[in-house]
Amino acid sequence: MPAESMTDLTSDYHLDLLATGVILLDAKLHIQALNLSAENLMEVSASRAMGSPLEELLDESNEWYPLLHQALNDNYPMVRRAIPLTTRTGQERTVDITLSPIAGKVNSRCLLVELNMVDRLQAISRDENEWQAQATLKEIMKGVAHEVKNPLGGIRGAAQLLAGELANPNLQEYTDIIISEVDRLRTLVDRMLGPKERMESEPTNIHEVTEHVRQLIEAEAKGGLNIERDYDPSLPDFPADAGQLTQAVLNLVRNAWQACGDGGAITLRTRVYRQFTVGGNRHKLVCAVQVSDDGPGVPDDLLPRLFLPMVTGNATGTGLGLSIAQRIANQHGGLIQVQSAPGDTCFTLLLPMEI
Image (cartoon, helix red, strand yellow):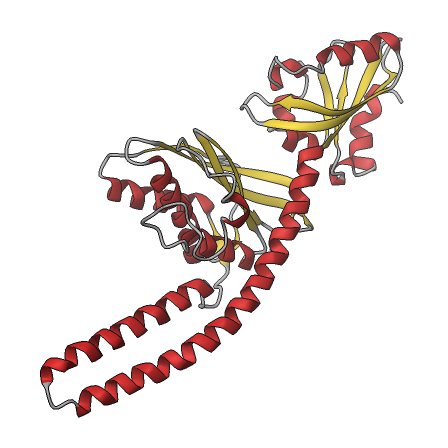
């Protein structure tokens, strides 16, 4: 296939709909074309990538560069499995690579590169399981809440009647404690169920949400916390409940603050992913809000249970913040992912942007 037809091929055969990253390189390994999945994988726009040497967009330590030259020189297709790939931003991927030399202009050769993200496929499977687990948990929690709140109402009513019958006013202190504790438990049950109010979807600017959260946290920290911003200005408004998203992002940032403490570093980052799968469904556009911190990281044994109610690695935490944030993400058709290592923990809130 002549290289000059690749751009037409991308549109004519809808390569932007593929989950596989497709890149066309010339004989000097300069990018001639790429699809949306390749843009997502390399974290670069087509306008930035076109005509650029591939090594400018990926970390120089990538081990598969010699394979590109070998495939071109031998003029023979090549397949390699589970190859590590690192972007310029330091993101590590694991990909299966297919290299196919093709005819270019004036007897030159070009190289068609296909990249399948192995870790992304694993992440999709985990996301689907997480989505199903959250849906099952929600139904269980509804049943538990009903069984718990009914007797709590009876206990509260009985305590109020008892308070009215007590001859000694000093004993009313004990009925007040019963009523207070019942109210606390009912509030706790309500919080475990997550937001009750109906979603009010309207065009929402995600950066107004993140900036509001940043200002709230920095005011609370009184200058003791450094919050960096790395926003994608191309993100359009999309339908969402701004109030609920503010609560979700606030919970994520509070969690990061608890992890890294005063003097720690938090980064708020936004990106747009195209043709991206969330919870088993593929979406044209997905907004990603990332909250990163330089804390000690999440213990490995805690990661699988991190979004369950009452699960926390903080002795002073309630274990509800992340659970509520995940519930809000689910209500918007999205979810929250987490990657954690000592000194680098990142929570990613994924929100489909379709109207």
